[in-house]
Length: 172
Image 1 (cartoon, rainbow, N blue to C red):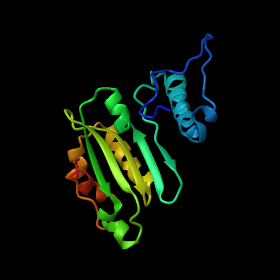
Image 2: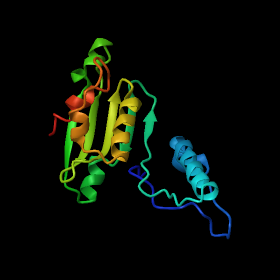
Image 3: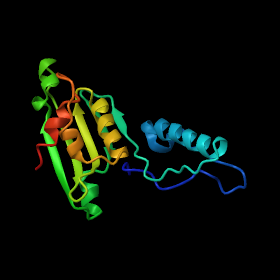
């Protein structure tokens, strides 16, 4: 199952003046989010006369297990298969101040970073509020921010967000 982004499609069908919206089951349990994104593309193209597509749209997901798993972008295996030059930042949750305070230190955070541009290519967070932390990484990916922006940012203490400062000091 490919998760980094979907293939570029403006969502028209093969019929003149007919546009398609996917059914939620396309991506299994995570299908409702791509379908909601399709709505925004249809609205932009049909009502606002725009030219939005699904090109480079990251499709995140969260599995609500204990602890949560949040994922977005490419995995280490996918980066290797695509012959990308990359670095891996990985940190256990017991390095996260907020996780220590609430005694929820199971899991880890992992990010795949392009070795040349320093942009985040993918991330996985297995831990307390893993989906929420993943969403912050997704925003950085969408904005094409280098990892250094998160590493050097000032976040409130003690929050899960500030764990991003530490994550990007732990490259393998």
